[in-house]
Image (tube, rainbow, N blue to C red; front, side, top):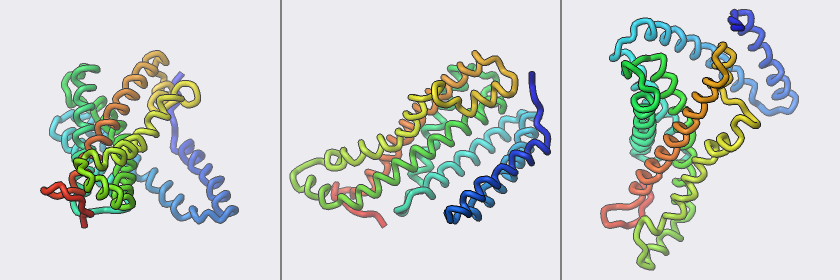
Length: 258
């Protein structure tokens, strides 16, 4: 059985936000304004992208698909940069590189080698897969970047001491890099540990609700979980290495970039 949602169904679901507003008001969380803006943006943004995707799906032109993939990647890189508390000149470039390299590489492997999509730019497959990977990668990258930059600032004395004891730059910051990458990977690993037992992921739930075969939905979810894990790991690693180089000059001296 397939259930088609109407505008009245969407309105009813939206009215549930009132519960959250009441909790925010009663506990003085001061989240009412943010929540209303977030809810409004959710409706507008998803409705807008729905119209765009319907148009692109109908046309299936490679250059249009490539354009929306580029825009998605640029927005993801910018979002990852904006989540970092301590910024520096060049951080946007670093986050864009980390997001784009990891997400595009893993998406290409999924489309060409795993799903064998023909042609490769079929929007039904490549757009949702890249979007899923980008959403998780930017979270992992922003967590890694934020912790690594903070640790470099807070532990600058320890790093300089290591360097004075003849440690090489990477050796001096290896512990900070390891901790930052681990922090960035934690949400992905936690999701993998409880998937199918505690939680049913959104992609799998959406497919089942849309009437897809549960076994196929499970297989797609397994594939996407591994893709997310690989892209997040690559993104965190690339981000950490790019940031690490920003904090050392050509003479391998530790610096705090402006």
